[in-house]
Amino acid sequence: MKKKIIHMVSALVLTLTVISMSVVFTLAFRPLYYYDIQALDIPEKTGYSEEMIRENYDVLIDYNLSFGQETLEFPDLPMSEAGRIHFEEVKDIFNLFKYMALGGVIVSALFIAVLNCRRECLYLKLTSILAIALPAVVGLFVAVNWDWAFVTFHHIAFDNDYWIFDPVTDPVINILPDTFFLHCALLILGGVVLGSAVCALVYHSKKKAGYT
Picture 1 (cartoon, rainbow, N blue to C red):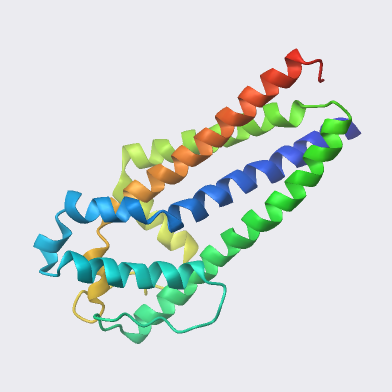
Picture 2 (picture 1 turned 30 degrees about the vertical axis):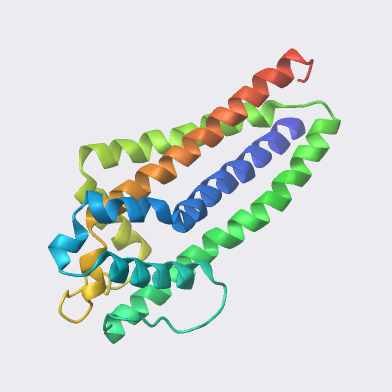
């Protein structure tokens, strides 16, 4: 029983680490947005130049990647107080994922080292199952109704309606179309699926090597 609990805890920690790392990677992966600038016709729809769109987006990403308490200021776009509060709340969420990713890597490494010395690998199988179950459930909701999933997420994550931007007072929303966030969600899910696949492959490899 104790052995199973250790493997279950290890699998849970590793799964949360995979999810957190996928979120942080997606946040930092600017080429996705750069591609969407043209794919979603953002310059044509907003009247902004691609250079201006990239510059303001980069400021937003730099802000969310930083652990500091600096104030967000767009070089070209005005921002309301409600908008500023929302971006601060978003940054708090990303900070949580960044801390989970960093802490998860350390804790997971310790679990892996101990269990590897004991030649045990059940936690990898459990992780591959957990990590594939989440994308399956979330992906189902996204596939059925992305708009509903998007709105529901915001209702769960935030206790106010500041995320409902007015394009007049917060024109940054014009360069952040919903479809881009859908692409981000798919990239996150893809990263988690990849983590699940890696764990499954390593598990089968270790089983062949005599691990239990």
